Image (cartoon, rainbow, N blue to C red; front, side):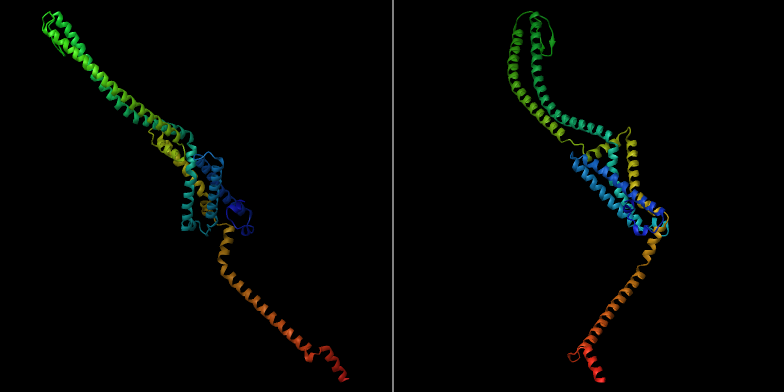
Length: 367
């Protein structure tokens, strides 16, 4: 099986020693390793998108088969020359190496995500909390704007209430004869219920009327603001529910979480170095088959293969000569058959008399 995975010609390999069998079996083993890693990585990647075991297991098997076919093709079509230097710096090797690196990246990245799975889940939870806080903050600003209008309404009423309290205290000072000045007015300094007392009392009455009117107006506005706040809160709760229901921890979300881990001031550099180390390791695993084949010395199998590559013209000419000889022999045999048939017809067909009767008559005649 491993020899087949290496794409080696078994008829040529059977003419070689046991060491060549072991080497080419090793090539096949190196081919199957990336396929197994590809199966694990794709199964994990698709499992973040769907809960159906059938889907992500089938996707993993399909991807493993693709990786296996590609790697087997790369290894089997790479023919060694007599010098390692020629192999390493050949365009054929470089193209296959780059293709192997591409496959290695595709295989390795989901495995890197899998290694950081627990840390990514924590980061995804943090991202969800931040998303909910952003929604709350957005609608909280709108709620605070409405509440600010409530505060203005209440402030105007509080100002009237404070002014009335000041007027009432000023009236007491006026009636007691105390000479004073307050923010709402001054007293006359005369101890009597005179014109100034009546004026202050009239101002208090006017303030009571204004406060009653303001309370009625504010009540309507406050009720409207309460309705607006309730509407904003319902919209906020709906958005939060939609966010929680649609929040995904799929493969793309984990990629974003990994980028956030790398950007952290504490531990971010360690995450980045670990990620690149793992990716380079898995890429190295994928390029091992073609690299090892290029770097190993030319063996008995490779020499047989080189000899066969040099023989096509000779074999073709000999084959053509052989076919011509066969064709010529067929024509000669057919001509010979025709001659025999014609001679037989001539012998048997003289005047319609068989040859034996003619011979008998000739003997009688001569005797």
